[in-house]
Length: 239
Picture 1 (cartoon, helix red, strand yellow):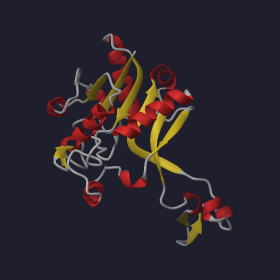
Picture 2 (cartoon, one colour):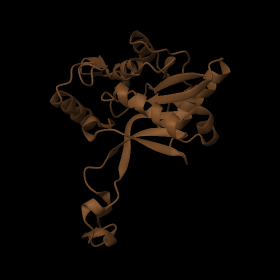
Picture 3 (spheres, rainbow, N blue to C red):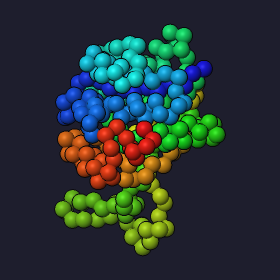
Picture 4 (spheres, rainbow, N blue to C red):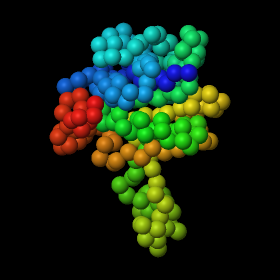
């Protein structure tokens, strides 16, 4: 069975209009994800799931396939990633291209590196997991997080951690919003990215920026420039 990359990219982004094809560092942002997928050398097919003809055309220009249009019911603000991936996997199975392993790569992940994607597949296979997701660490121990109480005063969410040193607290991760690997047979049993058998693929914090708002976009551009990265390249050589 084949190994498939699936890049979700609907056309109706509201907070950042045309977000999935807006130019980032000289390229439509989706092109960074397509190029990273191509550079991995592990994919039999790189597919973009979209409802937009414009996105489909640009994706094709940069080396991806768009063999179907995503139904409108799966292209609204409330549709989660799992529903999009399940739809794509079912379509592939129905068209004689059943996947053994699949990787969802977000269209707005310009920092994603081919070597991290390859590492995710390696870890998934070696550990026999259902899914493997890109994660990164928080810059501050969330176990010492604060909140504002009903009186408008600050208090610890977990006051039992007050006497503990930061280095004695558990390391905590959050979703890096770059890529998600699936053992397709196992994944389809639960159809959940965060399954009961998910492993983490750590990504350096300086290569992680979720892009949901115009401010996020500006921060990502500044990070990209500060790192001295060339258009269409995460490190100038491996894309």
